[in-house]
Image (cartoon, rainbow, N blue to C red; front, side):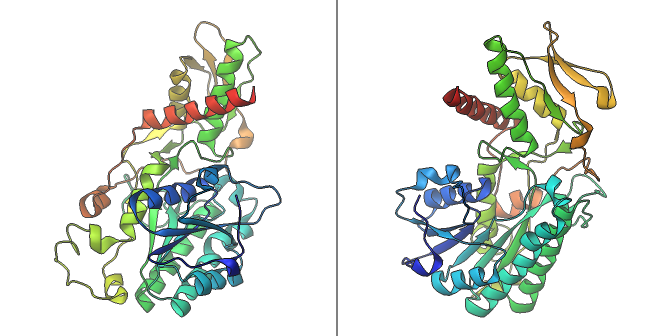
Length: 382
């Protein structure tokens, strides 16, 4: 796909949305959502890499309402330049160092990408186009060592990783700039969300890719190499990533979607971005349903009609196939984190009641979509 430099952007007429991280899972889904549900023109920002990584946006090659530009969130010059040239009406940030496990190894990089860069974004919006609406992707990892369950918007920040800390810091900056300068700036707490576009380093995609491989090898009489995992009893609230984009857009247009506040006139009808900012809220987005990594594994294997039994305890626990006794899963201590977040589950009542957001995809459907995708990819290779 042809990628432009920022100075070569031609700002389209009408509403312009700038989306960062478009080669990733969330950014690419956001572009698809905007093209489908709005008439906006989208500019997508992606880091220049020596090896192209455009698989998630390849289908946008000939899309007239989409432009792809070189953009680096950790370069303040890049941020100011995009604001000056594109003058977007919306700035949706999905670029980040988003792999929690790596945040211990790359703590400074994580902080600069997830926190310092947000300060630069807010400053650029404040100085150049203060009516631009800004969304920054927050995370359930901000809650960390949870005080109560399920977690709602009032839950305190208690991160247990550099990643969670960086997102908590960014949230504070978003709140400060919203309250100090009247910016329409929000940061949703997005609980775990997955799908076929998920990077292979994430545990859910690691699972579905391994299940596809094990299924293929077992059918073709090849030796099965077990899947290796760390803490399989960690509990998470998993959504389908594509569903969540609707929640993000509703957060960015709360005066339109808020049926119990702005929408019904309970609050005074705002006439400017600064007035709107006095009423906008950050929201928790999730399913309110919790599953362990162990359950995710079982569901993925069940999808391809492989059923296993868990045997042993601790790091000696394994999952073996019923009847055949083939080892499917092993525990590897190297995949344990220095500080584990054992349980996260969303309380999404407010975004349902106030903005009308609901999940569309069940846990079983999510796992099935991911396994299907990895089976398809594997069949193309072999």
